[in-house]
Image (cartoon, rainbow, N blue to C red):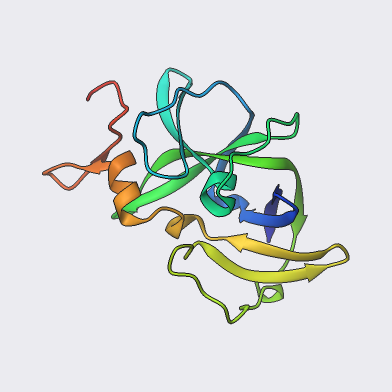
Length: 163
């Protein structure tokens, strides 16, 4: 299985590339006043606004370092009934892919209610890799801020042109 490798602080993390739509350079982001913790803002992607979450802010409590290797990873984020929306994830040193079998990853035995997206870990020559689970990355409250459900049961981004 193919994973996108990145770092948050000095720790290494991976995302299943099946969730990844595209990896972009770190571009200008417009902040959203009073946004939930971890929500960096919104940026224009091919004429449409896309919300962005700073993974360093979300997990470490500090913004990502603006390095040449800092990227925005566009993922297909599930919002319900098989529907997905683009979500940008800011990650440091997001420049490589790695292959691992899903069975290489094992539970740490430690869970965090505040970070259910922190999945199992695998070990390689450089140490531990932690799998970030995209489908549970956002709390329901944050998901509802970024992608509001309509009365018809579909989801829209409050930053979209139709709002």
